[in-house]
Length: 401
Length: 238
Image 1 (cartoon, rainbow over the protein chains, first blue to last red):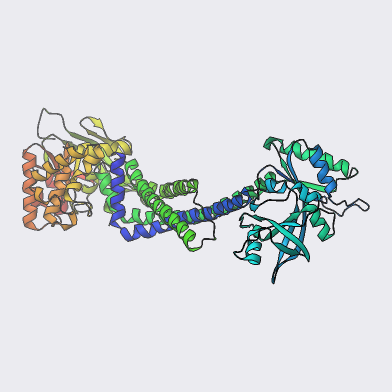
Image 2 (cartoon, each protein chain N blue to C red):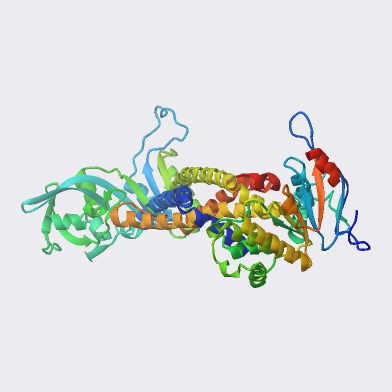
């Protein structure tokens, strides 16, 4: 008997019991669709996070004040808790031969007022390097320049949201706004960046870093961003920054240097794991579907005992019977798997349309995996009933009514 | 025994016995059966129910193997064949006709007749051609696309004969073939069997009904698992 004939015999048998076949398949359909949907959600989440960080670049080092002690325990008494200052930034800039840009950042919150309109915003004090390092650019006007910074000019660049709230559609460039009661000239409007990880990048006002230190009356930086010129030098760049700051801080390591790429990759590892866990949970429902197949195949073998006897009487070998029933269970699970792929993909599409905020991305590997797994389930759970059928004695099978 | 001297027997049974190990006490199904069946024979195996005639038929048809003695088909010992080899023996050498027809109900007459060819590995077109030929031989070609459960008993049994004939077996085994038929269909069926025997087929007919058995050229009697003479049979049954 050729494989094609086995398949046609199997499909005939499934067609003979349409409703039963469909219900049995439903278990597999739900299982496969669940695998695809959950994996798609996991993958979508990963893509979403990836997108949010996309502008950041993989070659960024972030210096923050204070030492994050991985070993825990209280800080040693007397250990100097040094701030990060412009002096640190200057040293990094001067001696950091591996660095493309060094961007000290001062953070503040202030009220911005224009005429009768006002808004509470985040104010970041930055230098000219901030723009290329963070990949945020002005749309019109110009960003902070060195001379702005050195002269502590009262100039500011407005994020899109701030501009709209204060000026509406009117031209803002060259206008004057009050930040924390001080008059600033608007010299730039930032390009639209949108929300990144819940933080509205468009709701920020940028000013020169020294100006920010003035208005917030501080000399402490919240962080220093460093871009390493060559991606491969990330580790040596980190070491260079560490040794420069270590020397500048009187041999105290009271700062932390984070590698953006390393942080992201560990985040992605977590997200990958999450995807696998979700897929694994869904796969359990596929197993349950498989048990449904085994159950119905056992019933089928019982019901068709006489048929098995007839086939054996006219010359079917044990393995012919085995293959016939194995193919039937596999056909059940494979067609269930195909339908499940369809349902899963349609479901993912429906989510994308109905809940646009929910990130879904159907990865081809998930489709392949879910389908392969469903076929495997059909074979695995079909073996026992098929062996039972094959082992029937022809005389007893013929006598069975 | 008698008949067709000179030619080699198609089937040769010597001291064939069958003991069933069911339950605590072994049950004797057959005991010391010696039987030769020659090509072209039309043999009736006659016996009451429980006499062992079904056991004998199962062994002749390679559905079962004896627990003692030897059984040869065309000189080939069947006694020690594997289930696999028995299956191909049934496929190539034996055609069955059962009392309850044993057709696949969801299949058309044609596909039922094709079944032995399917397991013989015959290709689709050849299969269909030979199945139609077999259906024509028993005069039921016009019902080839009917599902078997849409046919009458007589038609079903004709399809069964076509199925038994289709792979040109050495032996046709009919187990109470008229048992579920009305008398007219029964007579028609026996006429077909007589005709195909005349055309060269070897037939073994198992029955408890002497009037049916008389259609055969030769009758053997079986009681309590042993072959007996007609006189002994009358005595035991009397």
